Every structure is written in structure tokens, then in C-alpha cells.
Image (cartoon, rainbow over all chains, first blue to last red; front, side):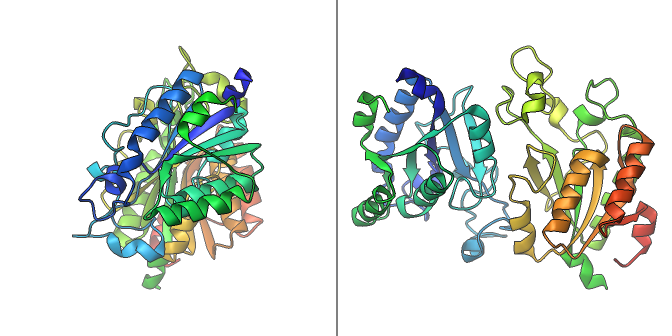
Length: 195
Length: 195
């Protein structure tokens, strides 16, 4: 099944300083703990030739492209999480995009919403998705459900390379995703599997 | 009607070195000639407080996000028009994005296709579009027709700030757009109008 890896993409979602670094007001509790697993997932993907996509939020500093419910964080003197060009928008220390990988910018929860992700994957013949990053109930789940709706053949959620505010929220969301056919797998299991 | 300018955006499309500069294999004949008019349109918009959006193509150097019919221009040793980070992807000399303006990256003809343009405009309460740039039958026309389909209240095509390979193609396309309700206007006329 090695050929399958040519048809697989790893989506690494929102692993940016503003959402991970301790001390950031937007840090997701539990996010730092998954860093080694996310790193390992990227290494496995690279070794297999799986296409790695770094999905990040990047926002207009004035907040004009931000969801209404959090637009109040943007503007002069505001915190402006993941503002374009800011340090907080960068990938967290230890994760790095390599040549040949792809950066995909989004402004909503789902990596498919208002982005060229589906076109890109379709054009490359990619039919299998593997998902890591933060946070489980929002950007992860919306991306996964859109992937299900768009008829990707399989979606694998790396359960120890994703995180939420609490373990309960994380687990409850994984249960819902499994109920629609998503495969939940630990990174090490995925590293030994052929799908 | 001054209030109307708060609900208006100027889309300046694909005015990038690779598509405009003489000597570029992708230069659109007639594109250089509109530069002064595009510049004037931007100046008028700024004076009125019209939101200026710089719509540009930017592509993966390997071509993975490019339309199939022109993917052969990308990859090692290829010309790679508007490749991310390249000089050819920059705005043509004389045009410059100012603070407070917005850069919107697209990978297909229409500025609405696989982008956050509609979300952005909806969130800002923008209902009127004014369009400049290149080239009339492709990126201009697809953007305009999508704008019509999305029920923008008015769409103004700046006829002397848009261009195509030949004047005939340019005019024929303007005719088609007028037939679906688009207003074609010279930049100076638009500068004196209140809509």
C-alpha cells in the first residue's frame, strides 16, 4: 500500500506561537503537551513522502477578515492573535516548514472554508487526509467534517497530536468524529500502519 | 451619497510584474498602457475612503496549486509566473499597497474562487464593487460575473483601467458584462460620479 502515501496529505493545523506558547492569552491548555507527537507525525509523513500542509490562521491587523465573534481582539492597541507578519503568527518553536511543503492560510475554523485546499488536493489526486494540531472542537473538527462532506476516502485523526482545552472536550469530540467514520489513531500506531 | 464609498471596494487585479512588464513572456499586450489609469483609480479610491484590495496571483513554485492547463509552466527550470516570493509576483513598479489596504491571493481566474473575498466584503458591509486590472476576458470577467451572481448591488468596470490581448477582445467582453447589468465607466467619469 506504499502507493497510498502519494495520495495522502498531513494537515498540521494552527500550531502557531499565539495558540501554543505559554504566556500567550490565546494559548490552548494542553497544546504544548502534543508538540512531540506533532513533530513525530511530521517526521513520519516526510519519510513516507506524504504531502505536508501547514495550515495557519493569519489575520488582518485591523480584524477585517476575522469572525465577528472575535473581531474585538483586533485593531490599534489590541492583542491581534495571529496577525499577518507578527511573531505570534509563526509556527511554534521546533516545527518548521521544509521546501516542497505547503503553507495554507485560513481565516475561519475549517481549513476548507474560503481557501484553495480542496482544489489543491483534488489537483494532486489526494484522497486521504491525516490531521494533527489544535484545537479539537473547533479548527480540527470543522476541517474533519468538511473533509467527510467532500468525500475524502479516509480521514485519520491523530489523537495524541491534537488537543483541546480539556481532555474531556478532546475525547467527546473524537467520539463524535469516529461516529461519522473518522479513524482515530495514535501517532505511533499510524507510523506502523499502512493506511 | 458620500456614505456609499464606505460600502464600496476597488479591486485591482493581477497588476504584477510578470503580467505587465515588457519582456515578460506572460505580459499582456496593452497592459502597460493602462498603468496611469489604474494609478488614478487607486488615488481616487483612497481620497474617497474606498477600501482598496490588491488581488494577486501567487503560485506554488512546483505548480501544485495552478490550473491544470498551465501547470506545465511550473517546476524546476520552468518560468513559474507569479511564483510565491518571486520578483515577478510583486506589484508592477508605480503601484504600491498602502497601510490599511488589503492583499488578497488567488489561484484561479475569479477573485472569489477559493478565497475569503466574499466573507471579507460581507463582514465589512461592502455592497458595491469597482474593478480594474488585467485581463478583461479572464480574471476581470470571472470576478465580475461572480460578483453579479453573489448579488453585489453594483459593479463598475473601469474600462480604461482594464485591458486584454487586443482592443476587440476587451470591447467584446465589456459588451457582455454590460448586458448583465455591469456599469462600464472611464476612470475620470467614475472620479466625477457619486456611484
